[in-house]
Length: 267
Image (cartoon, rainbow, N blue to C red; front, side, top):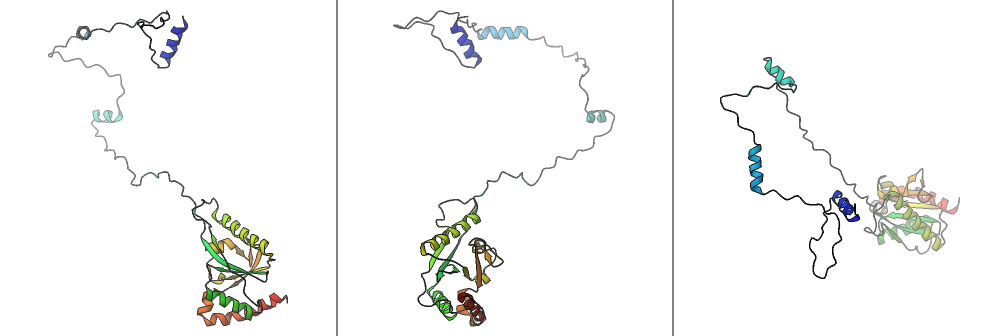
């Protein structure tokens, strides 16, 4: 078998129609000689019609009924009961579940925790934190409280505002809580490194009124008076806004400020 014929057989086996020129075009190279498969001539439509008529079986006479041929198939149980005179029991329709099959749900992307706080460092030792952005009135109240307790004298340090996430649409978090804790820890550590702080304690204003499931409470991760995120002890105080509105809250805070004064002095 020539290579050309073998190639055509392979193409036919793969379902690819092979084309070959039957006539030599002007100025074209002659076609290589090989054993071409002769295509059988198609039968004209008239001859195919006559062939079908000749092969058709003769019709049976109408007076003679065809003899019943024994069926080789096995009768179904319902047909057997019908022959014996027992009506088949009505079978209940198949139950259709009213609830559709649960479709494949696309996992929703996780959302980052949203929180903010204002902070300032007192004497390079104590970090004061207040949830949200401190108003000028709250800053003045905090300065008066710290001066009255003997914790700080002179001008108050600059208040720094921190918000998480830094850019809400910048990334999709994989572990929202863990990433937020790492962000806060990195922010505090960076500020302490630049300012030369030697942090000993955190004063968290508003901790007594903050729910445990709030984003800030989750990030600080307070347990037994210690923040696992900042690795520092935490003093918990009332919200500054509550102290502004309630005189009774100020009176209740005074004994605790005296204890803070002793702690600041190292007694």
